[in-house]
Length: 263
Image (cartoon, rainbow, N blue to C red; front, side, top):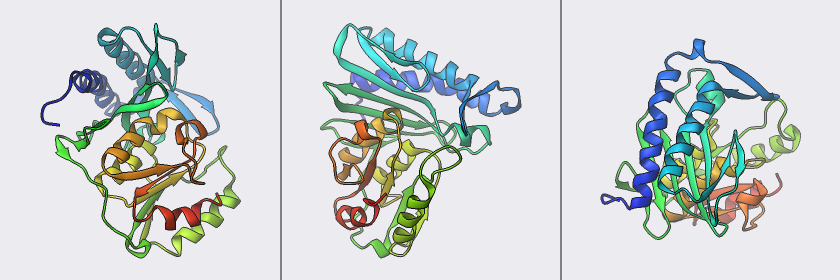
């Protein structure tokens, strides 16, 4: 995507502006105001500032589009066909602990389908972009999912339930089944970047349940535009609605699904 479309220019500009403040906040964590939304679920002043910046910048360029925001909820737009789906800091727990693995995530939905996505890790300066029919990119380099066809050679990412989230026992049964079949499992704490890593071929697959639309909207189109396959864990076609996602290259999807669909 060396010649970015007007839409991608709008999205990258908004992300880069929000990221400047995020990087400053990341370097001054002890001064951040933090509140608790629920068990092990935090929101920081940095989340709120970044979300405000993203909304302002995107609304300037596309004033009629609506929003679905992690912190601000749903904002209806005059254009009912288009909606931005935004997570200002995906990986807030990583962010708060000084772990440089978090991302801004922006997806654009049209008539219920994600048509564009951006995931930006500002610390690593890695910006993942995808637009329907135009491929997936990392900093202007074209992405393809991995070509591995054997689970025994695969590295699989996942999210692990923690305090206040998920059914731990059933998850551990599924995790044990995957552990017995794959070369490695990674739990990195940022769903959007897990999906971006599948798109980049860094991970061969990823599964998780209990997600929100802003966790995966941008990642879904990234994986698909990189040649990957995305469904719900049980094979359903609506991961954005269900919060259940399984993303792999096409060669591994059936085998991995056979293990994780019990989750």
